[in-house]
Length: 150
Image 1 (tube, rainbow, N blue to C red):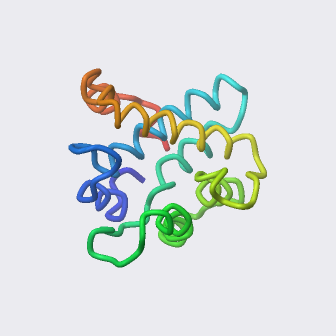
Image 2 (cartoon, rainbow, N blue to C red):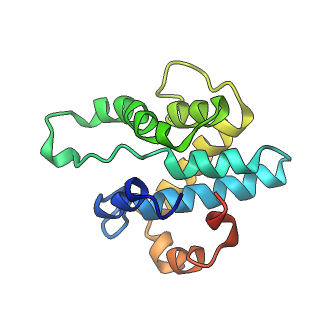
């Protein structure tokens, strides 16, 4: 899944902080989601897959007229549409669509969805505070065996 053309295309899209790609963010979220789900006895495979695909919107927002707030609501649906080619199950769909909760109106139906939503917020915060680069998280995740199996 990591080598899929759509997933690799996220490398060209910037994310929360300068120098962080959407791909790096999603791998980070996938790994943190996997670890949290495993520790909680949840479906860590679905959490890792949902974490990897949660921002698969493949859109350069600077080239659209979609406002910042609207992006927060729209991008999970765009990501789900793009991720459907990976043979998602209902749990993975819920993870992707609800990862922006509480901004999304519907409450996540599964504990794994809450885990990925939390991981997304933790990772975004680490990226914006420049902890991601300082701790060389990207280099460490390049060798993380859990990400390869997602």
